[in-house]
Amino acid sequence: MRRDPAHVDAGPGVTQDMTAAGAAVAGTDAARARAFLERTGLPGLIDVHTHFMPERLLAAVRAYFDAAGPLIGRPWPIVYRQDEQARVAALRSFGVGTFTAMLYPHKPGMARSLNDWAAEFAARTPDCLHTATFFAEPSAAADVRRALGQGARVFKCHLQVGDFDPNDRLLDEAWGLLAEAGVPVVTHCGSGPVAGRYTGPGPVGVLLTRHPRLRLVVAHLGMPEYTEFLDLAERRDGVLLDTTMAFTPFIENAGAPFPRAELPRLRDLGDRVLLGTDFPNIPYSYADALEALERTGLGDHWLQAVCHHNAGRLFAC
Ligand SMILES: [Zn+2]
Image 1: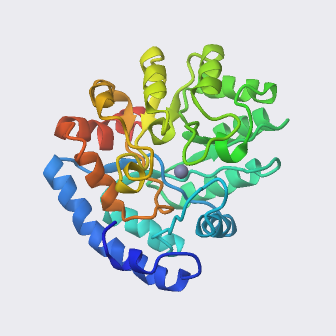
Image 2 (image 1 turned 90 degrees about the vertical axis):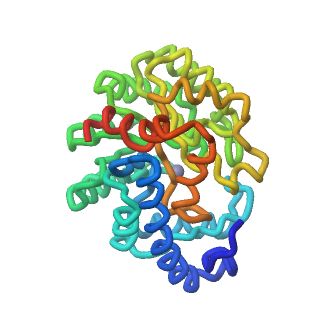
């Protein structure tokens, strides 16, 4: 890992220093991200996997990462700790023209209020794609219907944190509504960083046999089950993949490297791969994620599709 200010003292209990460090990194990042755009001939970035959520929930998420909780599995010193406005400004300074507000419940009874917050956030943040979520609970279909009515354009489903079976009967109608609406669902279904009861290609594979038209975006390229999720994407036209955290040294050096032999398949699926980053909950700077994609050697054409054109088509933005 590079020795920049954010990484030197990073760790639990140094949040104040890291706020300043985050701001410093954002400045450097902007220059590096803009250089990336220029090198690859991109008009801007569309990042389909960024997190914005109510402050109290975000604080809880940060505390969980700081403590390297059981679902994290390793030290994870988050770099970007500015307030919401500064985080939005940082994304814009990196050349991100459109982003999302991925949020997710970890228990029943939360989805509706999260969706109301996200609707309000999207209304005051025109470059954010209105995002919504749901949980396996009796209100799931009503929550999804309500969010679609509010104008949600993308959903987040977190099978690791939510710890529910995507094939739970409570979700049948919700998935049906999403498939019918053609609204993409960014789904954390890979078994990284720590496997859950319903992660892995099996449960979502079954789901897609029941809802074949569902537009499922496999977060993190499905890490660590990259190969199996590439298989799934090849079998199912509706499946897309997001690049969140993939290829960064943080992941490559920690037991979940992308298999080099699969790069040709990732290249061939290039019209169904979308840029994602997990900003702001990342333990490295934003530009590191962009430069990691560049190091795949898949070329400017692939990078242009992944970092902008594919999502532009999908979301008409
Ligand atoms: Zn995420």
